[in-house]
Image 1 (cartoon, rainbow, N blue to C red):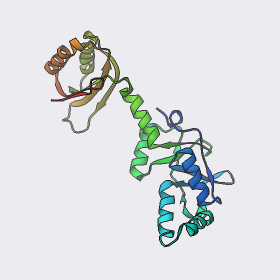
Image 2: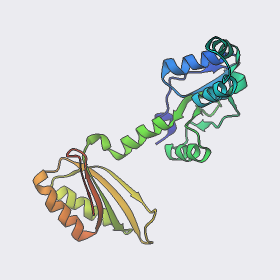
Image 3: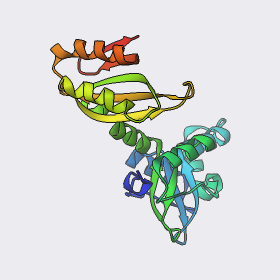
Image 4: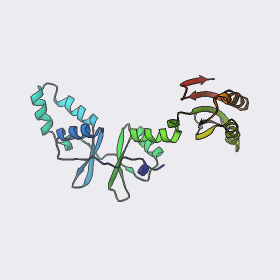
Length: 225
């Protein structure tokens, strides 16, 4: 899943010589928290709502409202922006992007193409959309968390059991974090199962392997084993 397919392509930018007041207005109008800063059609920085709050707090503590309005109209974006921003190539995967944002403790970054042009922005909100799509949680189905041996066919055995009771799988995710060698955690989301068959499925899964939990989003029911 590449960034170019999930980034926000409606790029809202602000000029380096624009005022802090202009930046505040643009962020508010478009409901965003970060903007690329441009000068002569080149990316020279980014500005975030955090930059604006920090500038206001440091420079306006002793000012009255009229002085504050004058201040924000005179401060230039170039004076408070983050220079040399982290940029994400548009052919990076969303996983690589999430790792970069987390490592650098930032909420988003400009996205550039192979020629260095800004073609979008990617933010935590965009990554949340990816997570929702990838896991299939929008179907409001049922998710099982299981411990399986890391061997060929182990997932197929579980999938066959789910199909036997009428379930349709929408996502299968695996993880090797915090499990013994030779095992993996598997998270399967499904829907369309006959509720009368659900108890039989749960018992069969428990016979085959370790079941950590079941979450039934439609019934808002959670069972931790």
